[in-house]
Length: 210
Image (cartoon, rainbow, N blue to C red; front, side):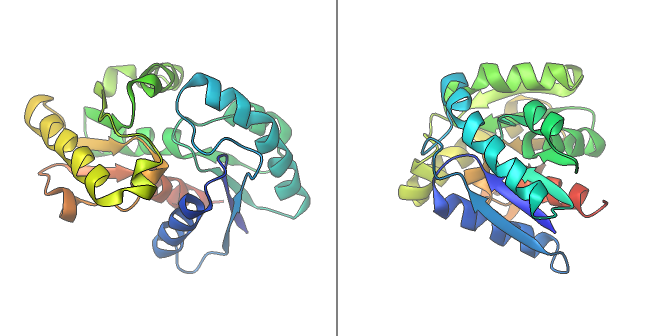
C-alpha cells in the first residue's frame, strides 16, 4: 500500500494528488492522508517547520498501518530526512523524485514554483541532492499555493506564462512543476515545447518499484 501524505491541511490538494497518483498507477493500492494539524499551505521555511511535527505523526501511523511506501506530497520535501529516519519503509519526496526524473530526460531543467519565498528552500534541496549543475533556474511564478485551489483558472494561466518564459529563455530540456498544487498542468494545456515533470507522477512511478 502506497500512502501519500499531504503535510498541509488542504484536503482538496490531497484529493487532486491522489487522483493523479491513481491515474499514474491504476493497479497500485494508493490512499491519501491530509495533515489536519499542518498549515493550510507550505510556502517557505517557516511553514515547513510548522508542518513537520504533525507530518511525522502520520508517518509513524502509516508505518503502523503497513505502508510499503510513503510519499510526502509537498514539493519542498518537507520533513523528508526526519521521516526517513523514523520510517521502516521507503519515503519519497515529490520534489526529489521530480528532480531526478528531470535529470534523466535531459541535461538541464528549470523549476517553476509558486512564490519567491519558496525558492531558497528548493535551491537548498537541489544542492543537497547533488543536482545543482542540472538546474538552469528556479522561477517563482508569483502565484500563492492556495490560489491554485481557490482561483485555479487565473492562477494556472499565470503559471503557464512562467513556463512559457522558461521555455523561451532557459535553454532547457524539461521543466519541473514546483508545487503539488500544479498536478493539473500538463504539456497539453501549457502548450510548451519541452516536457513537463510533475512530482506526484514521478514519485508514484518510483514508489511502484518497491
